[in-house]
Image (cartoon, rainbow, N blue to C red; front, side, top):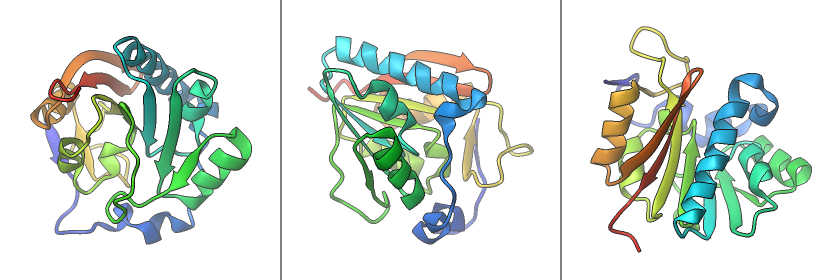
Length: 195
C-alpha cells in the first residue's frame, strides 16, 4: 500500500524555506538509524561489485553514509536541502556534500549509484524523482511501519513493504535485494536499461 499525506501542490515540509533553519540530524550517531546506514553501505559495495564506480547520496543529511564510505576507492559525494546538514558534513565529517533543492536545481551530478535513504517520503513527487534518475543503481530506504493512521508528522508519503517495491519498480528499477531492519526497509535496485 501507499499513502499520501498532503493535498495540492508544494507542501510546506518539502520547501527550502522550511528546511532553512532546522538543526542538523546526526543519524550515524543514533541507534535507531545507524543500521540502515550500515546496510546502505553494504549495498553500495554490492553495486560496486556489479560494476559501479561512483556514488551520489541524494539527501545525504549530515554526511553519515558518506563518512562510512569515504575511504573507498570509488568516488562519492552528496546533496542535501538543509544548510546545517551540509555544513556538518563538510566541516565535521570531512566529506563532499553540496547544498541543493531537488525541485529547483538542475545541475546535480549523478553517479552510477544513487542513494536515497529516508528521503522519498519527504518529496512531493517521489515517483517522478525515481523515474528521472539516470543512475544504474538505486539504494533507497523508508519506514515500513507507517500508514495513514500512524506516521511521522513531517512525512508526505508512506509505504508498506509491497507498496514501496511496487513504487520503485513502476518507476523503472528492479529490486534485487531487500533488507528489513527494525522499522526501515532498505532496497538495492538496478535499472537494466542503463549501461
